[in-house]
Image 1 (tube, rainbow, N blue to C red):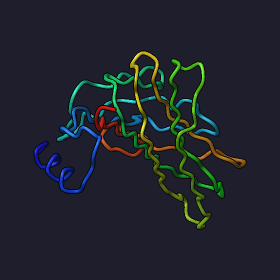
Image 2 (image 1 turned 180 degrees about the vertical axis):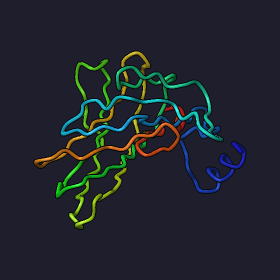
Image 3 (image 1 turned 60 degrees about the vertical axis):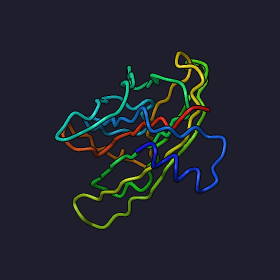
Image 4 (image 1 turned 90 degrees about the horizontal axis):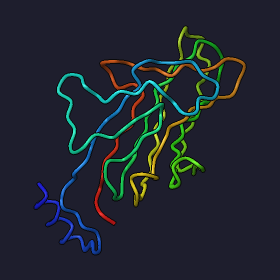
Length: 177
């Protein structure tokens, strides 16, 4: 597989990026849903361990919603959040934050937001997704977290599941810098 990637890269004229195959890729999901107005960081994470799941490389480390990377390099961080509400609540946002100083300060890298319309139905559902690329040059200080916030009189519920990926993050190490 990596030979195919290298050949495609060579033919397309990509220069300066060492594409030798993906060494790390893993999906983490929120196993228990919650209702929040502002949750920072989102907790209740587990590595996907259902059905025919797969992962490559060393596992990410997660502690109280803060993720630590197992290796330096450029990482693709993708986040999807599945949400619902039973009233006229309209706005929710999911965010990716990263730190290069072990959490002393956080950078707001990416945000996805949506408005959930009031259709008159019992439940109104939606999902949002966002992603960022993060240069992890030191595994001890470079970390990430995910947050949720919404506006309105009632809080929107974020879906979780132990066997289904409703709210989840995918971490993929793309290569060396």
